[in-house]
Length: 284
Image 1 (cartoon, rainbow, N blue to C red):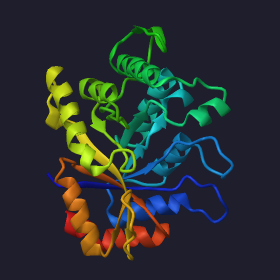
Image 2 (cartoon, one colour):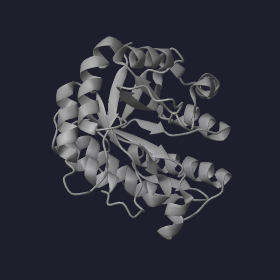
Image 3 (cartoon, one colour):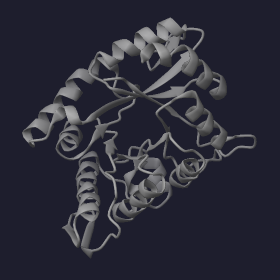
Image 4 (cartoon, one colour):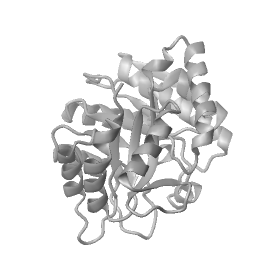
């Protein structure tokens, strides 16, 4: 199966930033999807992720749209389910709901939101997934959870095409939850180094198999920082000549990954162009 290759776009709202131009350029260059991160708190000017991606979906025609990943405490999962249905429908089925339990505790505290223990985060994520799935499938959805509940809730219309859910998960319980309930995995290289990927992926696959799901039906994606040019002596992203970058990404694919979401390190426009011209053809 051919690798799917996406590209992350900046959420910066600084003067001169052209995020729409970046997404359109990514589409023209042949990337499969664009993604954007979800950090709402901070002193650096930025866009809100969902609004930004909706604008990008309306400004493009083919390229996929991925949240990378939504911090769960920022939004009610029931409202997120409705938002996802709308964006999936209006974009013509191009949306992927990337979701995380929420790692940036200081951001949530600053916004007056729940700051949860690691165990509570996974419990809340399980509740959220149950709510979202029920609203997408049940005529009248009810879920009584410790963190999130819905009662006789109606979401109309239902999604007219499946909305994939990819989780940015790392710990054992989170990986088990992913294998049982989600459609894909979207970890980041700095937090899930390559030597940890096989065991983590095997855990997801075992959980899927135990839940009578086909492990091969899941997406195994990877957030990877990439710089085409001078090699940088760092282990948390890939750099070097085009050949070196291709070789390293092919090695990573050999760990059982089928999708890369590349984060350009350096000048975004230049790196988009170089990755598209000098890396993508060889990977595909």
